Image: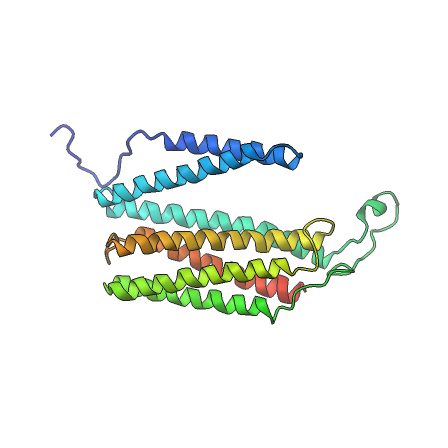
Length: 272
């Protein structure tokens, strides 16, 4: 009776995963710095592997805790709030790239090094810079936009199917969303392979590939997130009353959709 639980909170057991995750992050960052200075990439690869392993085992523990009944309604509220704060941090992350793109688009400077050596005002350049052939926004980017919007519909359909306890509809909605995410990634890779400008040598290419590239990475992560939810749903681990993991995946996917709409409107249409 002395150890009987008389509260709605989850007291975590000691875990090695935070320390292992921090170690992997340090290895990844240090290895990336070394790789950027033309040294071996193996430390970066090892750090990335440690981070991936930590994510797998840590989240596996979270799933086990949920199945054991540790995720009470109070704990679920904390999990939702934590994920909302994570999405807010992602909004700030993408805001930096939008800020950089719009700053250079509105105030383009063709030769800042030469201007620093002179006492005259900085000259006004062109945007996109001369020699840059941008993508046609109404070609493959528009198709990708429609794909992501459709995927937002399928994941919402899956969510409603889960709430209404319609298991086949839940699985098909998730299958459709994962498939659409994979198609988007393939189209994005195809688009990159036909780019007539590079990442280095011009500010347009650097901003374009950083903004759209990080979004593509988030699409890949979101697709994997939903694939895990599909696997868990096929095993009956979600119920209409308890599906925080699925909600987090759906929120993340809708965030990815919204970011792409801003990218499409701001970078492909206006910035091009």
